[in-house]
Length: 84
Image 1 (cartoon, one colour):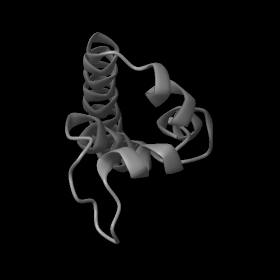
Image 2 (spheres, helix red, strand yellow):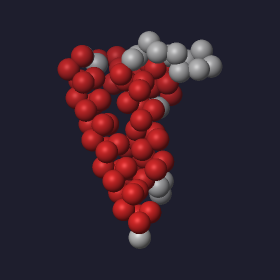
Image 3 (cartoon, helix red, strand yellow):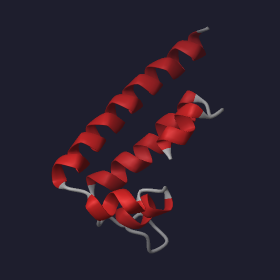
Image 4 (cartoon, one colour):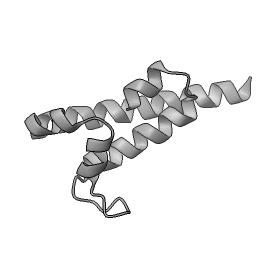
């Protein structure tokens, strides 16, 4: 979903919010995300279903790191736009 936000018309703050949501879900797949959804359930909603089937721990850690970088970059870009 973050990929779609990056390549779509969404603002940097929307990219940050979505990436943070996915980051949280990936960080704890069993976490209660409200409405009886676990982190894994939310990721399935975001289109990660096939990826989760074959996921190894190393893959999960790489994706968490990538999302962290996306969050940091999008936050910086949002701040720059706000200053203009």
